[in-house]
Structures are given as structure tokens and as C-alpha cells.
Image (cartoon, rainbow, N blue to C red; front, side, top):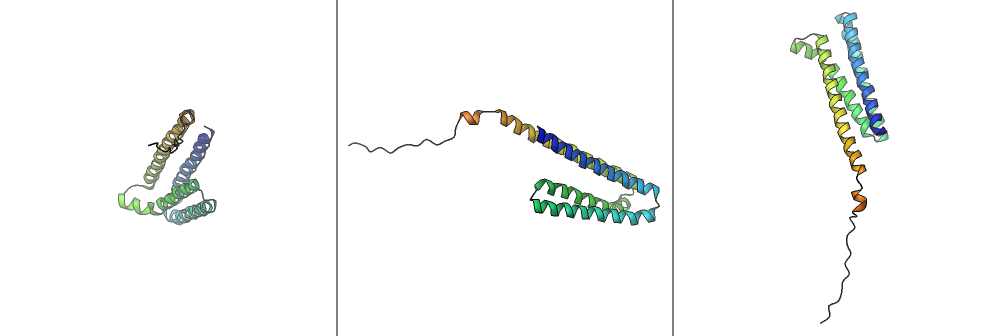
Length: 150
């Protein structure tokens, strides 16, 4: 159970970082003009892209699948950031609406991720309670060959 709590805590921290990232983008958009915001926005998206590349490199050196998933999430966040200005023009919505929609999508993703992790952890826990594997051993029976008497 402690391993599950640790996973949930890490994912919750990552979720909070993503929500704060979207909040920061929204505040920058509101406080700065559109021209200055676009310059800042491109630097932010490139820095997120570099962070995802660094996470991929660390995951490769440690051979960690969990870090790779976090790297993929950061890469998707940077792609979302890069294409957001084009998506705003295409769908004719405001930047704040796009940020809110992106934030909601990430929240839903993490809710489903929590549910899946809980289900997997619960199955492992229930399997560990069962002692049937200890009782029933799957050792094959060895039959000895006997010579027939004619």
C-alpha cells in the first residue's frame, strides 16, 4: 500500500505542476500584451521541450519506464503549448478558454490514471492475500518407467 501512496503522491505533484503551469500562462497572457506574450510564450514552450528531453535522457540512463511516461507527458505539454496559438485562431476561441480546456483535459487524464493505478494495485494486493499458490504446487508428477512382465 505504501508503494501505491507514493505513486499517487508523485502523480499528484506532477498534476499540480501542470495546473500551475497553465495558471502561469494565463496570468502572463492577462498581464502582458499579446505581442510581448508571444515572445515569452515561445521561450516557455521551448524550455518545456528541453525539460522533456532531459527527462527522456535521465529515463534512458536509468532504464526507467516511469520516467519515460513523465517525459512523454512533458512532451505532450510542450506540443500543446506550441500549437495552442494556431488552435486558438482555428477554433476562434480566447486564449483563456483554450488554457482552461487544456487544464481540464490534463485533470481528466490524471483522474483516469489514478483510477487505473488504483485498480492495478488493488488486484496485486488481492492476489498477495491468496495462499492458493502455496497450497497447490504446480510441480509435474514424475512417472517411473516399469518393465512389463510377459
